[in-house]
Image (cartoon, rainbow, N blue to C red; front, side, top):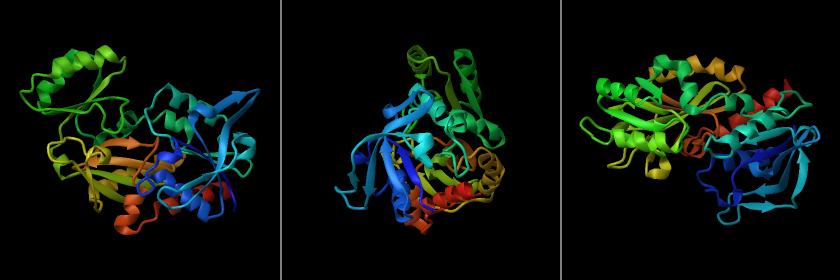
Length: 319
């Protein structure tokens, strides 16, 4: 089948073509003969009963400095003129992101005459990565979500060595490791709670982070592989963009159990491309907004996640 694909993303001109998962998905779409259009969430509109966006047709190639060629921008009705929308802009998971999910939800469907959004906009909206994970609480480390300083201090007294992070943060921003005896917790809470209306997430520190924070990729509810992200020396965060090192890794029996428990839920909710984070066999986050890791996974073990994602999309649309 030949599909009309719209990609909602941050500027394509600035992506790292050797690491970006969205770029890998676009290359595979082009290889299959699908047409590509790109637009930024700012270009998304609702008017007179229809959702549309100002889009640019684009062709892509893996050539550094010459990876994208654009056509003339025009307004395209998502429900009538596209078959697939890839919702791939990076967080933050803010009100712009939430508004986009409402607009896309109004055109989402899974039949040849509807527009299929990946991932399902309503379930993206209902699955912030640090909250969705609580549906699988038996696999989580000890965790508290609260704005109540007394609750947070009590949790710290119980677990002593803790991680504090914003509930709707992303990319490791605002993540703090407070070791036993660290006197900065009260001041840190004053800063967090004084500048945001959100709760914070507090978790027991997992020493296994020194061995890595494993990103497991699930496609249509099936685990297809993983990469290990090892934090740099002196750093509590393993995110690649703050100096973490990616390395190949397999799955443990506990991680396979986590994925098996999660798989039916992801399939039921049309969450086609999901990345989960596991530290020392403890599930810490579920990323459904803009998961990454496809290119690293292919380099390490040859698994072509982009092809598997398009297989899953095409299967849904041909059912």
